[in-house]
Length: 202
Ligand SMILES: [Zn+2]
Image (tube, rainbow, N blue to C red):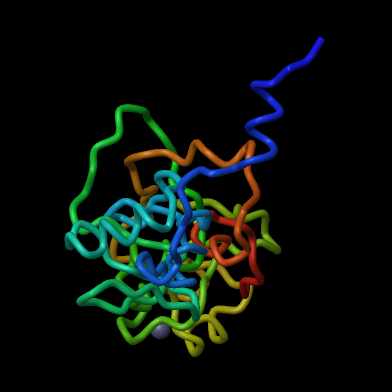
């Protein structure tokens, strides 16, 4: 049985022709469509993964700021912008589920304002208040930002032994949860923000 309909579609092809010169698409913009960006809340809690195109829209609308960007750039008529790998919302968004913020070096530094909790100078490392060698846990209530000197001085001693005090007990940041990544590939550049363990001292 002849099928003229399908034959005419595959043969003639007199359909509309794309003229590339009249619709220039920057290669960067084309790539961005499929790229993904990690979206953080204003408090650095990971919220979700969005398309990089969506992330760029958020940045251009000043609803988010880029905190980590790729080498590639995306161009529009008025702006050239590095393609964001991670963006952070400028305003905190309340998320209707309870959660624990992943413990990451950056998040600890953010919580402790990048300041050594022992002496107030600029923090360069993470310290376990109760040293891990003494059973201290790698948890929010036992991890603080510290300067190298205090970290080195403290070594594996307890605060009581040193006569040191914390200004306040280290708290667990509260807020929105990390709920996405089960099914998708994690961009290695997101790891820092997702609480993937990295080398820490003491
Ligand atoms: Zn210090």
